[in-house]
Image 1 (cartoon, one colour):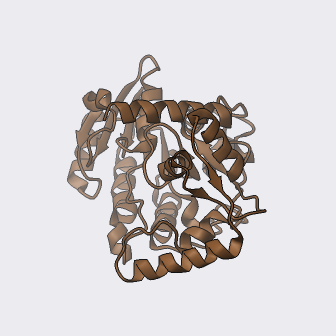
Image 2 (tube, rainbow, N blue to C red):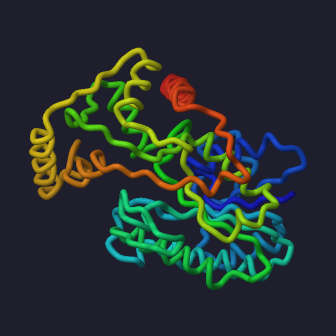
Length: 325
């Protein structure tokens, strides 16, 4: 089994490649413009840009993959036009064109984003979109390309990661752990916020299950990468405190945090790049976002790690990473 991973040097990709390397009879190639986060994965990496069609075509012709996991993308929210997210549109076009030419490829999994809809919105079906960012718009266009342009005999699925966390993560989700552990995490008093988040080692098991399944009902559709049960944010923060042996949650009144967010907006307006709190972040931290995960039931109903186990693994990794920069 030859597995081609695009964007495998990132957070999810690093954990996925580590999982795939546990399998026997598997050959892995990661193409990414950045080197692997994990230096042990260097041997499986080739530098390249999915916007370079000639490079992508040569990879497909030389490697002849049986399975594709496409993760390469621009994922920040800082772009000012759709052209800034060309990797998510033109890059997907290049990948699909090569998929259509390569008859050895049997299945392709495309990683999209929950931000094809606004935070907290429950889509009515797989093609119900309401993005509020240019990044989300670019991911909508990428999903539409998969549905319309891919060859009919190629098996495919789209995966929308929710907010994933765990070893090898970085901003913004590592920021939650850092804030809690340093005693600077705040939530409005007397409020509970529930989120469909995913511990990354559970998420890679979901990807692996979708790679292996022979159930046609699991294919040609969208799956959300998320743990089966949503997390309540203050419960999650308390688990981080327990595992770390340090940290604190501040619960000021709603109005105080709202005013602090407005102050953060003014700081951003005058040039501070990342104030501790803005109206965008305040809305994000107080909005429920629970996604439907029933699509996994018939072929991947078991979840390997609980939230508590995931927090412990993550804290152990953070402490090890901090000790060995």
